[in-house]
Image 1 (spheres, rainbow, N blue to C red):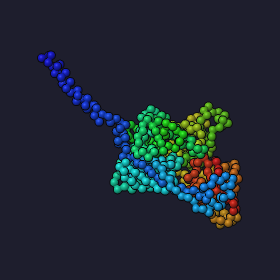
Image 2: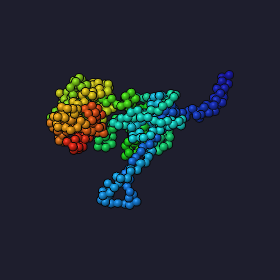
Image 3: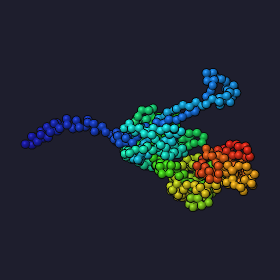
Image 4: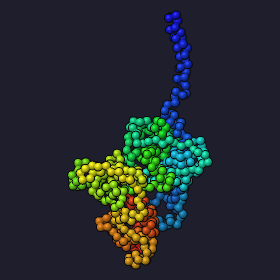
Length: 461
């Protein structure tokens, strides 16, 4: 009997072995976490096709190769010919973040689009409407009108990402719908200088391929949760991809859906570079940080006990190396966010939590005076008589702060501001609104009139 039992067990094992092998080579066993993540999220990934109308001045001598020297003599002649218009199409990606049809994508994907077509994973096509865009963060929200709920992605958390963690990118590179690439997180908190005036900060760097077609698409973790928005703005990158962390994108996304614009985080702080002279003057050991040159009265920073002369070392856990980096990191926050700052004050480090708010419209005039060095008023009977103005169009400069950016470039009382950036200024309220839009920029373009003569000036506070 003792010999029969082992033989019986062996016989059972031998007979069962083909069944076990058959189960292990089935379809289910090959469904890795990555496969499951793609299967879960793919229905929420969309193709975004945009159409841009481009106008070009028509050259009546297009068959001739004119020397640039002679071309200047025909400029007036060219103007009599209507500009030639043509359409340019481009492709991008997006991810459905709300079952009602809200789609998160990059701002540069839909920039200047005259028509937006959204194609769902099931092949249905819809016309897309821009709900709001934020060029500073390269984030935009597009809405499509649907009767039924759509599949939406599950939001992840980008605050606990790990270098080396597996990630998956889905999009439409080169028009190839729903292409999947994978890789790992190569680095965190990357900053990219796109040009002299634009720095994007706090990127996730990955070796998953990201091309113009899957820009705006999702970057997923192995659980199929959205941890970033792929972006292909850095054309020099080869084998390197970048994504906007979802925690940053979500704050901006919520504002765009609710307000149509971003409620910018305002602390009431003006900063400047921490130069070697300042480092020596303050007796500092470290060379990073920015010097607070001014704190606006009754601002969030003022209420948190921050003062001029303090040095900002960190925002949250990010070290601040320059005024540009300070503004870039701050752009990731919105009004009502509680922001932790590490401050060096009177030789001691301390933490300060500042509850950001949107720059109040009533404070815009004072903010412009602190930032640019000009105080303006409406053109009314009194100011028109005081400065001998023959127009009511614009905002008149009534004060110029000594040694300010405006003072150094020659702006004086009685000059009229007609434009800030791309915003036309017809009165004081227009001026205040424009300041709300541009007050965090490193420089701003103004159209200033003195008498009948207008001139553009760039102020760099």
